[in-house]
Amino acid sequence: MATALPNGPIGIVGAGTMGAGIAQVAATGGLDVKLFDVAEGAADAARGRIAGFLERAAARGKISQSDAQAAVLRIEPVFSLEELGACFFVVEAVAEKLEVKQSLFAQLAEACGEQTVLATNTSSLPVTAIAAKVPGPDRVVGMHFFNPVPLMRLVEVIPGMNSSEFAVETAQAVGAAMGREVIVASDGPGFLVNRVSRPFLLEAQQLLAEYQRKRKEAEKEARDMVAAAKREADAIVADARHFVSALIVPCYEALEEYARSLNLQYQGKAELLRRANERGLPIVITYG
Image (cartoon, rainbow, N blue to C red; front, side, top):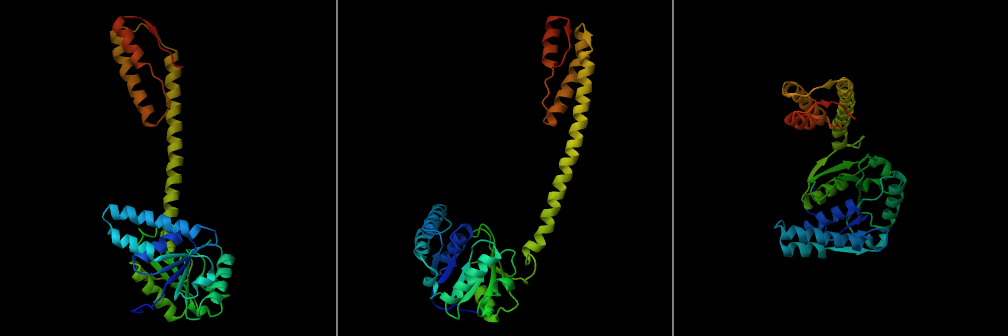
């Protein structure tokens, strides 16, 4: 791994959530950043958001006020890809579409010097495929950050089939300068983290689906039981003296409590029974 980075700024293409997050950790890591986005004003807006985040971090004592201000000053919004020409390293965080990334990397290859390492923040597209239409695909490497970037310390560096050792080592060194925990993953489906985590997420979804199905079955059984109890109660006409109420009220209380535990809409008459019993009145037990 490279022990020292070249002098000069890094470039970031895309000033959305991911691009701004990468710019923030780069700047707080001491790297000068040129931030570009095709949307007018997006890079300036991202810089403003970063300033707000760092100001709040300083207020909480997570970073000194002077370091926060210095980091913001390291971020320079630029207005064309050509302004990234002096960068020794450029990472993109644009739409996760192969044709979009291939087109962007072809433009970056023209705008930047031959020694500039071009990194993609793709989370799922093959790095080799992104580099396929780039003159000098050996300088293309994957560099997968996780959202939210300032809080997620892990970064995957993914060598494509043609990525040079220099490109891989530069990406590792840039990640280390940003204060990230860098691992190297193969250019396969999901790389490492997504490939490992997807089965867990899918299993969780399956368990949720099974739980919901079983819960619906349990609720149906509960509703059937409640409906049967209501039908039986409708048939009862009682002189609700003390000895009758003493038997009936606890039953209705238990039924109401069970219904509430399943979040069922259930209006019982336990309180009515209590009041009638207190007054010694005969009542007809009905449920609406």
